[in-house]
Length: 116
Image 1: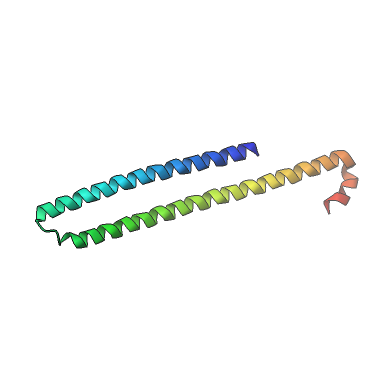
Image 2: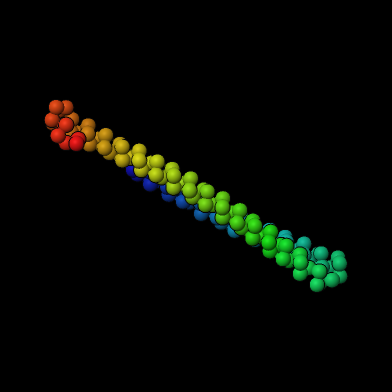
């Protein structure tokens, strides 16, 4: 059980690190997009043409965010699934241990009373 808790804590820490990296990467990309927009404005000498570009950038950012959230959801679903499998294994192990203890204590013939 302690190993399971340690594994889950490690997974949580890994998830937090991934989220921090994601936020830093997102900021860097937004800075790069802003720089590109500024260069585009200067190159074309127009400020009104960037209105459409900004909307396109916002749409692209939102699409990236959607993809990122979908990936995070899939990762969380995998983690939950692994946790459920682990719980089932632990429950089987506990049941098996209890039955083993009853066999030692009461013998196989008397065990049938307890297993119903």
